[in-house]
Length: 286
Image 1 (cartoon, rainbow, N blue to C red):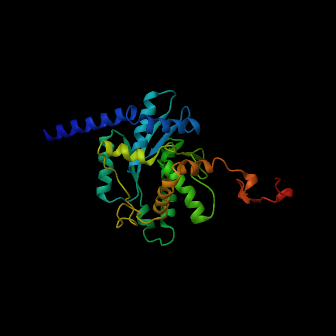
Image 2 (tube, rainbow, N blue to C red):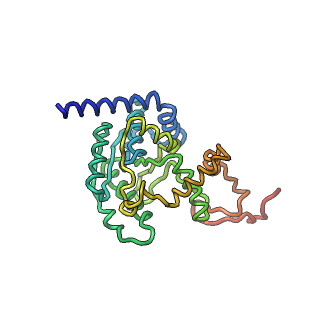
Image 3 (cartoon, rainbow, N blue to C red):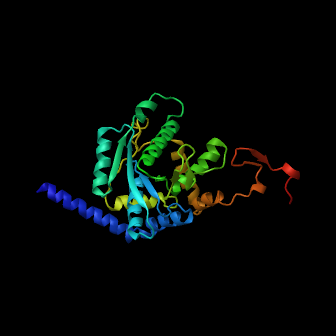
């Protein structure tokens, strides 16, 4: 009897979540999701997309938004919901599986030993881990016949990356909404959550009392709420401070990499990595 009650409760939550995407959260979640797909041509007819789920709120929401997009069925495309286990603690693996069942996301789970391989790396373990994760995802997606992998990076990730590059690396660049793989022929990476705000993802999660995986990385397991004092967290705090005086600061940061005037910068690199200075070929004119 208790199992039947739990199943009924799960079905009720699932229905509420799906209805909410079509009603309450349509303007804040589905519309910017669909806008990014249309603006950046992320999904095309006959695509087979591996929707990569890490276990967090962003990727699970992305899965539900893709299901809603598929329901509209304006043109044919296929979805595979892919979960890579890099060496999660058993309780984290169970949480992902429970949420997949609760939200009716039919996941394919495969295991790797990434955490074990990077745990003793002192220099840039997070960078190495991210690269290895992506390689494994590309490889499995390709084996499943997919031509694209979808990651759950959202608008806030994009603008934070812009500032992190400027402040910590002395460069102007950001996450792109679509990239061709250099190592897996015919494969692309897409970021359909590109225009979705993190605050709206949090509001969605809290509205239905959903509990997702936070940071399962062994390097941050002892820190409350993940990377408590990371560069990204410091940049988040900086943006919140700036927003108090300049409410449109987030949009301005985003627009800054859409409105780059190459004739008004000291130097820039082209696609091949060759650096060009402002005073080449006689210099700029006033």
